[in-house]
Amino acid sequence: MWDYLIGIALVPLLLFGWLLVQSLARLFARAHPEFGEAREEGNGCGSSCLCKGGTCQRKTDRPPHPQPPA
Image (cartoon, rainbow, N blue to C red; front, top):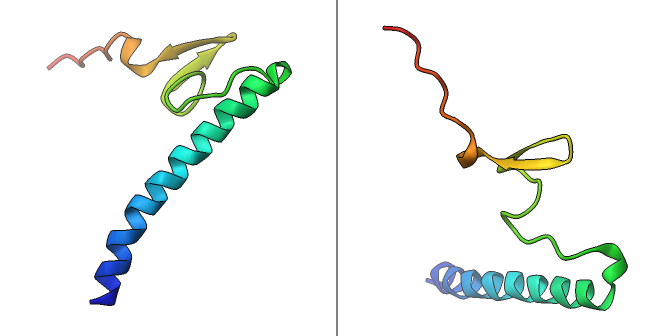
């Protein structure tokens, strides 16, 4: 029973902690503009885009793969 209660309490605490980290990152970026803006999840070059020559092209913006002839 205690395991369930700990799990139920832990999930919202982790979510709140992540929101706090994001807020602190934005505040730090606002206070220190020399480091650039805070990188938000899903923005900039990361795991969900293809970076070539200083530009970032999202995977969803790519043309679809050609289908092999049947």
